[in-house]
Length: 88
Image 1 (tube, one colour):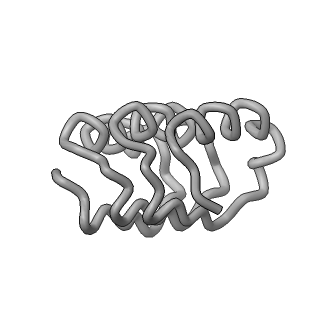
Image 2: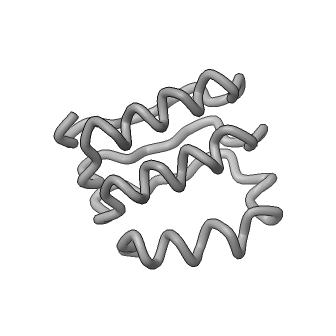
């Protein structure tokens, strides 16, 4: 499934409660960009089940990566984060 930021913006809030059992999420090669990084950061800050997040080539830049980094300070369960092929 290919998602843009708009698709991600609709997907995350509508599934927030249902994503409580999600352990792996691969959004690689999706054009979520900076706003998507910030949106995912808000999800990560409160999620307690996600172990792997792949965001390779998701068109993230430094502000999206920084938002994710700050969210990880509150998230103690994520074990693997792939940010390769982004302009960080």
